[in-house]
Image (cartoon, rainbow, N blue to C red):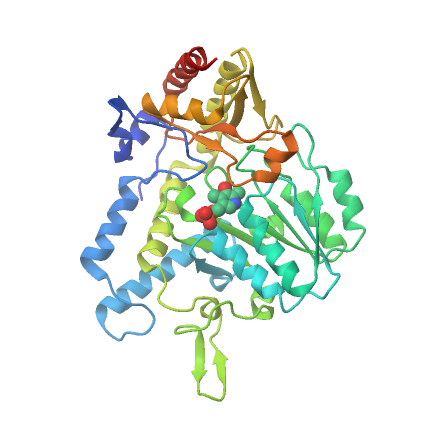
Length: 409
Ligand SMILES: *Cc1c(COP(=O)(O)O)cnc(C)c1O
C-alpha cells in the first residue's frame, strides 16, 4: 500500500465515500467514532474483491479458491501479529470482536478460578468488560472488586496497590476509556499486577484507532480489540494472548475447524490458533481487518495521534467556552473523546437537534453506566473525533450546540 509522506486531511477525506453524503440536507459531520469508525474505499475494495474473486471456505479445500482465501486470511493474521508485535502468529485469534474476545477469556478462567478468588475490574469499563466477569463470578464463586477512579477520570493507582495486596488472580482494564477518553497507564498497571502474580487483560477497543500498542513491550497477557473502530468492518476482532495462556485455557466453542480428531468417545483439539476458531469464521472480515491495519499504518499512527490531539485541544477549548458546559474526563492523558453536558439541557435533546443539522454524536451512557453513576448523571453527549475530521467541522458543531442550547434552555 502506498506510503503517505504528508498528513493532508483533505486527501484522507477522499478515501472515505461516506463523508460525501448528506444527512437531513446537510453535509454529514461524523463525530461518533468511538462507537464505530468509517471505512475507507481501500478496505471496501478488499471486501468486494473477496466476494467477486475468491470467496471460498478456508483451511480445508484442496481447490484454488480455498487456497487463495486461506493464504489471504493467514496473511491478515500475520499483519495483526506484526502490528501488535505478538511473538507468534498463532497468538492472534480471530473473533467476532472485543465482546466475543472477552467472553472467550472469561469462559476459560471458569476452569481456573476457585471460590473466593479475587479479580479486579476498573471503575471505567465498558459493559463488555464487566458483565462477562460477573457471569464468571456467579459460576465460580470468585469475587470481583473495583479499582476506583478520580474526578478527573483517572484510575486511582494508590487504591490499585491496596487491592493488589489482596493477591488477585486477574486484572482487567481498558487501554482507553470509551466514555471519557482517558489513556490508562497499561505498562505500569501490568508491572504492578505481575509483581503479585496476577494476569492482565486489556480492552483495547478504544485505543487501537489512535495508537499502536506493542503487546510484548506492555507485557500484557491478553489484549482484545474490534476491527470496526479502526477502519475495518463490523463483526470481526481479535484476541491476542500469550502462547502459554492459549495452551492453558480450554476451547470456548466446539465445532468444525477447532478439532484434531473426533470420535464419539473422545475428541482432541486442534493446535493454536484453530483451537479457538470453531466453525467457518468471518473470512472476508479477517482479510479486511488486515487491510484496515495496513491502511492506518500507511498514514502512520504518529501522524494520526498528533492530528487528533490537535482536534482534541481545539474542540476542548471551544466547548469549554460555552457557558454551563461541563466536560467529564479531564485527564491530561486522553484521546479525542469529549463527553459533556450542558446545564438544564438533556443530552438526548441535544443529540436530536444536532442530528437535524447533519451532525452525528452519541448520547446516553456509552455502555459504561458505572461511570455515569460515579458522576451522578444519567448520561452525557459524546463527540469523538477521528483523523478524517476537521477543525471546520468542530466550528460547525460548536455553532450547532450553541443553537441547540438557546432552543432548549
Ligand atoms: C466498543 C467498545 C467495546 C465493545 O466492542 P464490540 O465491538 O461491540 O464488541 C468494548 N470496550 C470498549 C472500550 C469499547 O470502546
